[in-house]
Image 1 (tube, rainbow, N blue to C red):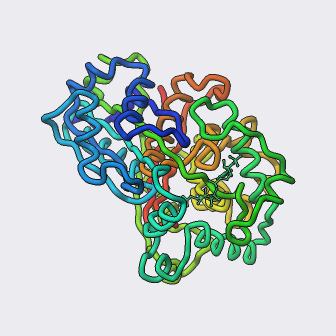
Image 2 (image 1 turned 90 degrees about the vertical axis):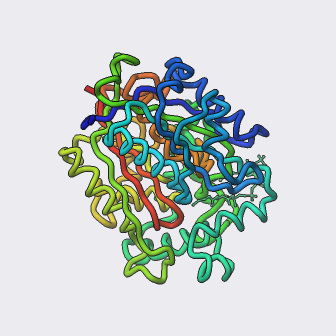
Length: 384
Ligand SMILES: CC(C)(COP(=O)(O)OP(=O)(O)OC[C@H]1O[C@@H](n2cnc3c(N)ncnc32)[C@H](O)[C@@H]1OP(=O)(O)O)[C@@H](O)C(=O)NCCC(=O)NCCS
């Protein structure tokens, strides 16, 4: 059984309002992989597909559907649903399949959101928070994260300018990502003066609704080098849950599941925070990126805001975050987001990230959150 697990290929479709079906998006993701995925699919033993079924597309059996269109049947394929962290968990499942003896496995994700009306989108999004106490009382996800932002502002003096600066950075990063939903630079003034969605969050503090797919091939140490000279090793995998409803959590200025998942991943990887060169974190709202910086342990509580103003997390900063544009500007097709983050880490570590390529990077981290923090995965990947 393989102790070491490699990512050997990764790809994604464009994210955005695309008018394509789930199958077409998944084929786009397969085509984006550098390797011959037809051959790899014949060797694949286990498939895990993250998907919420938010749109009007295929609601049941999406994993079998997608693999059928990658021209494979007769293997184990299943859907994984953990809200916006669905494909972070699909990746963890595919990783564990290799650890348990499979030679090649697939993690992927897909979501078609824009075939629903805005009203239906918001309803289906909201039910991944606490349905009984939050969604049915009228709360949207923007509203829930707004409460967390307000509390963080109250406890630590966090400002709207700090949050808006995250949006400015992520929109700027997305300009160099051809797969991103938005290619539009925004100024701090635009971000600060954008229409209010849920006080204190404005339009540019929110991720958009997106269609898209992503796919990652994993392999055991024994076979990885048959397919690529540049395997990227998964050195840490962590996952945790928390109460769904904010009112059940002792603190809402932190995401406990992130802290716990990070502890597992970094202990397994046997590295220090300072050895992580860059991160893709779950910025569904700007406050979520700020919380991630603290809960992942890169900054003490209350210190991430100043780090943002210093541009520590910019592409030339000490810890680049969301070089892809993040959920904010690359887009957030729910089920496809977690493995989409792994695609970015893989591209950076294999030096295939084009104009946004970071220099001298060896270790990257992916952080994927479900709902307002009820589920979370953290993965650490490293090149030799
Ligand atoms: C922010 C939000 C409410 C805006 O929805 P909306 O008011 O229906 O916006 P529209 O789709 O009508 O778009 C209006 C304009 O704003 C732009 N836009 C929409 N969302 C945007 C966003 N998040 N950031 C930047 N621009 C955005 C659109 O491109 C469009 O621009 P155009 O007029 O130049 O074409 C919606 O995107 C949303 O709910 N986002 C959060 C999704 C979510 O909760 N995901 C799960 C997270 S846990």
